[in-house]
Length: 406
Image (tube, rainbow, N blue to C red; front, side, top):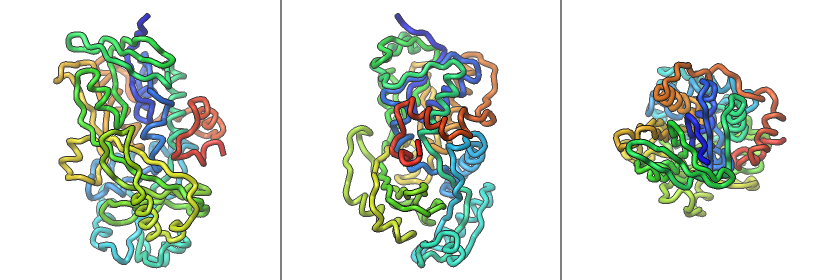
């Protein structure tokens, strides 16, 4: 027997979970499905940086403004999902000082707090920072636990009546005339879901789901390596102040430091090469900022696949420094009740969800505002409860497996 719902959200990462939460809070009947465990795709395989926006300042003003706004919102609503570490953008002797100066001015222009200190003061804040660091800029970067964040969003959605299914792959999409009339879902569901609107929040896999509906989403999935090393004591995010490149971010955990990342376009987000040169490059470049991570014992490594939108990447000419998001209406392709939300970054997941939920609400005639910027997430101030929620969803991903449950 077919299951009916107002909205079917496909994709159980941060954006999909956030969209389900937003719509459920507005009173919509929502179903959320994912082919694997929730938060086990791109979201769980990030470096876990909650951007201040400084990385994008100067190259993507809108993206920088979105990041600092969402950084502040998540710090307020997400509690123990977020750790306020602060961050440093460091200029090494070989780095262009004009780039650093432009970055500082751009941060000021968009309202990102940026305090410049000399190398000695930076080393006083971060003992062990390279002697090659000539100056640094303090910004409000932070660290986010993706598994806790998704679990809290899913719990919030469920509390409002949303139905959530993990290990529930979409096996087919039935289009009749100009709309989706059924979505065949396998796994434990093994039913056809008949939604009024479908939201495609599958990230790097958005093109595959769109194709099932006879629509097109051009993606450029890009792999990136993260290496977590045994290293306690680094309390601050470190960013290299230069044009984006390999090994320019170090994210602190309590007993580990996560070194990242690389950027290599792949054809298939499920099957791709893992290259030794990436391991070597990430170590070498991160050690230029913070030498002790160069020979620290490796605890684990993982590759994530960024859900980059091909037209935007092509316009920016390759490895850009933007992570804008896009809400695609497939009505022009003849599928009027099918939307895709792509691009973006973990930091802006809530904003992406709000944009998708606004459009869905318009379609359904729902006259309720977004409340996710003010409503505190379930368990936000209770790490143990958050970790129970993560366990109920199948456990943490590699990004924060050393944090959840500790």
